[in-house]
Image (cartoon, rainbow, N blue to C red):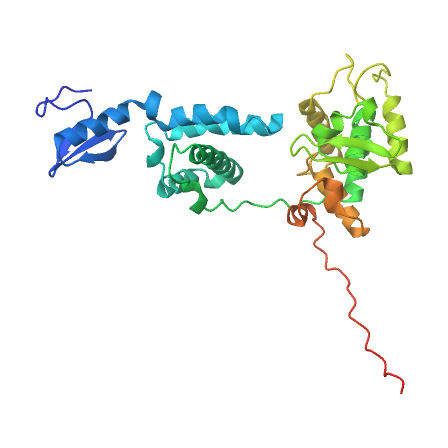
Amino acid sequence: MRPRKKDRHLPACVYQRHGAFYYVSKGKWMRLGNDLHTALLEYASIVAVPEKGFPALVDKALPHITRDVSASTARIYQRCAGILKETFAEFRPEQVTHGAIVQMQDMWRERAATGNHLLTTLKLIFQWAMDREIVEANPTLSVKRLPGNQRDRLITWAEYQVIYARAPDWIQVIMDLCYLTGQRIGDVLKIEYGHLLDDGIFFEQEKTGKKLIVAWTPELQAVTERARKLKYSVKSVKYLLAGRAGKKRFHTNVWRHFKAAARAAGVPDVTLHDLRAMSGTEADREGKNATELLGHTDAHTTRIYLRDKAPKQVSGPSKPGKKSA
């Protein structure tokens, strides 16, 4: 930074222009006030970021917003908190306005999912601060979520079969369990022997905490027996789908083997999570309750997973007959 040639009585990064004082950082001009006394007080509050700045608010709120959520959701909040602290590093909480948040969202428009996670995390931080009268308002409430590209890929039964044929036996078992239960891969890998109940398989979804039992069917019973007999499955271990050391398998390793099978089968653009959509879609076709199967709290979320875009055949009402005299 070059030494000042004038206004040497002003602190670093403070300039007087057009009858007002400004704090300048990274090319941004922040108005401090019209008189020097007011400007110096405002400047002092800005440079005291560790105590009064927005990053300090994030540090205070984060333990509370991650306390009663799943481990995967907590990781998302923690990652977003780091981005938010960097984005608003020189802001005080009251300076994070609707417009500032929209500008942040514009930076993430090409990665809408991350942008929306940031908005959700920011909303929770400000709600926590409002509840404790640290701030007077939650500026996120007026900010719209970024429109995302909703995935509509539906794996066909033929594609499922060719991927299946190229997959090792333990991946085949996992594919069947994902499809027959409709659960996320993380919840399938967590199945313990104690979760195999008389009336079905018990799940407590890691993402939402929703508890449900997927009832036994002949197909589900058969694949569970196959899981028990896998080469590396040991009956004394905790998990049904345990790896060689008897521990829960890493889901990243499962994804890698599934993608390798899909490539070998020549099936493009598929993920393990598409099996959940495939399951919900087929359950809906069969007239079953896909919302309950997938563990959603409302049907709107389920509709995201129902990827059968073919028009459904419907019937109109019959014409009432004439009433007898």
